[in-house]
Image (cartoon, rainbow over all chains, first blue to last red; front, side, top):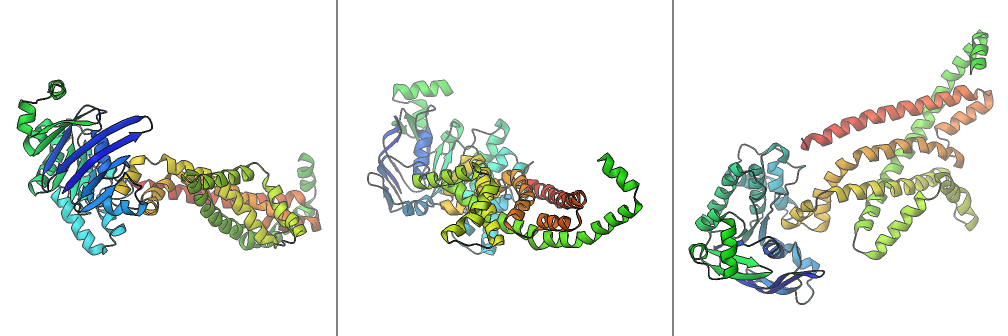
Length: 244
Length: 234
């Protein structure tokens, strides 16, 4: 399903990803944890090509981009559509209502008919529990509601993989649960997901695999119960002690 | 001023003459406004805005030659007087065989001017939109032009509305400079009428008042537009 091989990312002098190899099977939920600066967000952004990797290749559902040679600009938007991105700061379009936010991609990018898209968008917003907030502008919604619109917006493009970049980090504590619930429902439906998060409970309850990153490397990976109870690497132990 | 007022009060015949002139000149002045001042302003502003968006995009693009061309253009226009630019186009170019009529000359001169000034406003407005908005557009598969058109420019236009209104209102008044290159707009008509009856103060005050009324109406329109555009922010 997803196959990342030898992925490097360098910003000027700073090498953030130092050779990442990762396979994710269809329908699996992978949680990426690690200290800040470990490269976990950059890895996620490389999958959506919001950052262009320096070298290495990414394969998603039979489509491959190899960054060792130059990648044509035309190849990027269709590749991006394989993945849906959910941002830490939601990044909703403030000049559009919740419904318009969700409809924007299918209408502008896929050129689907307005009526069909509207129906789909309404269903998606109901699914994330916002069926009664269709015509609200982002500023009229709480953080948790905005993030759920963000999830619906990404789902509207029918991606093969959902990427979550610390989706609950900007939220007040009491609003975290509603977003995590939507994510868990999605996981139960069989969506392939890669989630960068500090929510260890989510990792325990929903993840098939937990990956610990540090210094641009994948240090350790394993099933959540093993990772949290008996990590093998010293750095993983240290990190888990710090956050628990 | 005191002498002028005294002479008027002392002379009822002069008063009725002034009223007559004010009344009879109103029609040709308004005609100048409707036939030239207002169309010149509107055409110029639209052309100028298109030029400004293109220039702003060139300046923020990653293509070096485009950046340099845009910079030189903005620098040259902002660094030289508008009146000199108009003279170059209308009186200067014919010496190398390029003859342009007064009205199109004015359109070219003012458009170049608005384009340069407004490009800085639009550039700043585009840069003020958070990077996350571009990324959100890209993340749902949108291309650069799609993201620009659907996501960035609608938000940037809200930010740039007040300074662009300023440019627009300045432009209304600046079109009076077109009188210097023989466009029979409102101010030139005032000059022509005053030259026949020598009531310079009256006619220039009258024309000033009409400019003021036009700008006053425009600032009301600006207020309404701002309110409309603010509907999506708290």
